[in-house]
Image 1 (tube, helix red, strand yellow):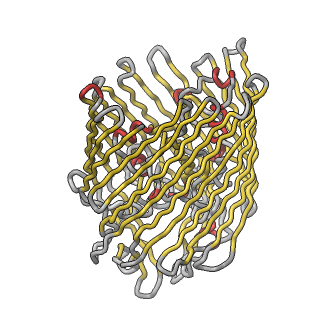
Image 2 (cartoon, helix red, strand yellow):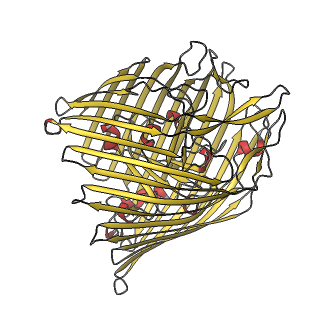
Image 3 (cartoon, helix red, strand yellow):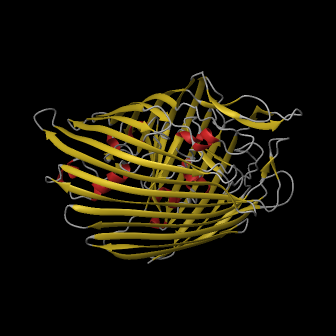
Length: 632
């Protein structure tokens, strides 16, 4: 079943908004809303996770979510050329369509190809980014076979009205205007934002002279209302209109080739809303949710739609909280959820009509806290599919806090599934034929980690070992002028180590670092996933916190890419190619002029590194930006 975010993490936000004595007992001030059907306090999460906050995004002047994810352990980012170009992520060496993406609890993963293009996802209105690694299908269904990325935008505050404006300019003809309005009163809050960013870009091809630019307009809105003391409403809407210059890929060399006038236009619309009812003094919390998404893409001057996808989702969730003080001083919650989802896909290139499918999901979850030291989570899911075999997935996780040594142990285990996409089933162009008989991919994964804090929590390091086995992988098969897909008979086995470290050297100097080692033991070739990767982020404040400087570095080891060309016989053939390792360094600074205004600037790719994230596509050289931000 594809994604199914509606009655999971949005319900978590609804639970937070509810006046629940039991929710308060679960200590939900700081939570990972994606880690369960109800929110989970960060230190009680047994799953491998990372949270990127708005403060980190602001301090490092990050402009795209994809760039924020480069410092997350286990996450690989591949951008096709310039800003706005097709940008995918992989978790622990997964395929790009093995990662579920949520925006304010609404599934954003496109059902045409089963993946999400991060090329247009700006960070202007984002409060936090949560990344869960490992199979999460028991909570979210299909697409979450390797992990979940949940983008949560900013809500209003119930203390009056606030406005913000940000402007930025830089090299490559780059300009940004970002506006925000938020606020609220005693029983409601709201937040609305709009961001427009444009760049002339650079030539992503080695030939020709045309720059490949991008124009991006993003609008976002959120509303929370307490209808009564026990009933609340929350809703969100997001619209993105993108126009990106693109180049063709040569089937002679496998590289980008300059092609003036080509473009890709994409319009994305996501909206959803839910009602949360708290009863029995907060012991029973119920929620209903509806969501709708629409993504349309077209290319070239003919205005031909390459894909039009829609998704409608309805669901219900109920959670019962109870305590057993005489047994392990325990607190418990039991949650049940049911969902229905309708997906449709229309391909204007093949003109083979509208494809449709219905999906149903039933989920149960238990969360428990024992002696305020042991935290357990278990879930099971049953999916009913129109076109595939029904699926049962499951997961279990545990965290244990050792107060004497300030040590936290965490572990998780789960099974995930990934249904074939519409492209997989029905093809995408005349030389690529879909296979309606494909089976869903399946994965079993587990991880175990230790987080150690010391020096009065000024230093913390989290080391996690993971292992994952993928079966029935969907791969290209056959040879000739037409290609298709089939399920691999081989298992793909992966394992590795993820390290995240956080050090407060002084009250004004902070260092964060990450490292990932990935080892593929057998099975299908894993593309665009290095064996070694890492990052370092350093921030320093001055003048009583009015000024800051930062430097961050990303290291990416050698990795394999797959190049498709046409041989003299007219057959499509693929061959591996090695992309060289690289390191990219960014620096920047900001200064708070007064209580309302801040000036900032940064230099990206400081040492003008020449590298590739996708074979045959250039990346940006050294660039610089300056901006002004004001809050009222």
